[in-house]
Amino acid sequence: MIFHVLTIFPEFFEGPFAHGVVKRGKDAGLLDIRIHNLRDWTHDRHRTVDDRPFGGAEGMVLKCEPIFSAVESIWPERNAGQKVVLLSAQGRMFDQSIANRLKESSELLLVCGRYEGVDERVAEHLADEEISIGNYVLSGGELAAAVVIDTVARLLPGESFQDTGHGEGLLDCPHWTRPAEFRGWKAPEVLLGGNHEEIRQFRRKIAREKTARLRPDLLP
Ligand code: SAH
Image (cartoon, rainbow, N blue to C red; front, side, top):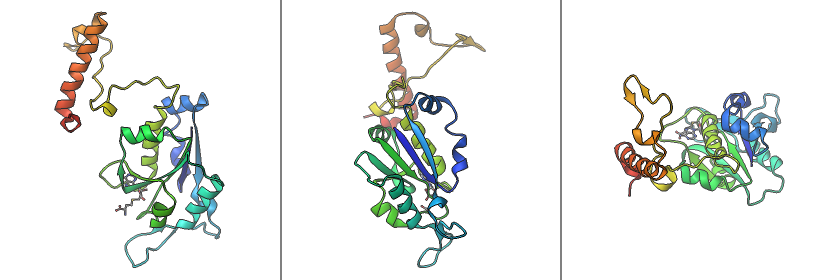
C-alpha cells in the first residue's frame, strides 16, 4: 500500500515513520510512504500556500489550487483505489472501523491542513473523506495523518496483529509479562499455566470487565 502525505512541513515526518511496524513494513516492501511538499506546487517567488479568508476573519487559509495541482500530478489518472483523505477537526471521527475500510485502498493521500484550515472546495470536490482524530483542535493535520497511517499500517497483510479489540466491541484484554511477581503484584495465575481453553475464557472475561469499567459505551 502507498501512503502519500501532502504537507507544508515535510520534515515533520522524519520521526514518526522511522520505527517499529511502519519502518518494518517499509523495509519489507509492504508499504511505501511518500511525503510531498505542498510548496512544490506553487508558482510565485514566495511559494505561497495560504491566503486571507473571504469575508474577513482571523488567520489564514490554505489555498485550493496547489492542493488540487498536487493531487492531480501525483495521480494524473486517479482510480477508485486511490483515496484522498482530508484531515480536519470537522471530519468524521476516526476509529478502528474506518481504519479497516481504509486499508482496502491501494493508495491513500492525506492532506494536512494548517492555520485556520483548508479552502472548503478541497473537502467538497477533491477529498473522498474528511477525517478527525478526536474532539479537539490540533494546530495542523500532520499529527493526525501520522495517527491514521500508523493505525492502517499495522493492519496490512504481513503484520501479525490479531486484536480482540475495538472492532468487535470489546477492548483488548490486558497483558502481563515477566516477572510473574513485581513489588508484590502478581500476574494472574491462570496465564502462567498451559491450559489454553482456560486462558481463552479468562481473557474474554477480563476484556469484558475492563471494557465495562473504562469504555461502557462500547458494550451492546
Ligand atoms: N479553524 C479550524 C481548525 C484548523 S486547525 C476549526 O476550528 O475547525 C488546522 C488544521 O489542523 C486543520 O486544517 C486540520 O488539518 C488539522 N486538525 C486540527 N484538528 C484536527 C483533528 N481533530 N483531527 C484531524 N485534523 C485536525
